[in-house]
Length: 83
View 1 (cartoon, helix red, strand yellow):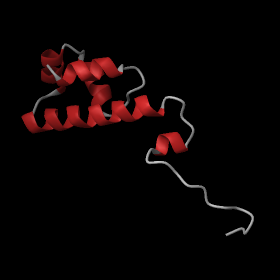
View 2 (cartoon, helix red, strand yellow):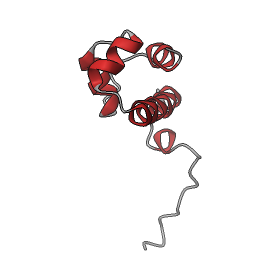
View 3 (tube, rainbow, N blue to C red):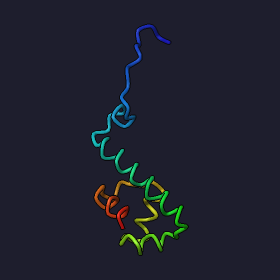
């Protein structure tokens, strides 16, 4: 290790450490998506069934199932969990 480089102390949030401006929102989305995916799996729902229950489209459910959360709001994820 180069003696001129000092390790920097990180935070509890790797997204903050990486410099994402919306790190807190991304972390919240990931947590909600994990809970959503756990519920879908626990209930044995297809994406179409999960979409019908939550009012989301099947493509949106597919995005959440694959953790592609760029085009889904935090509010929509919260609504899906209380459906």
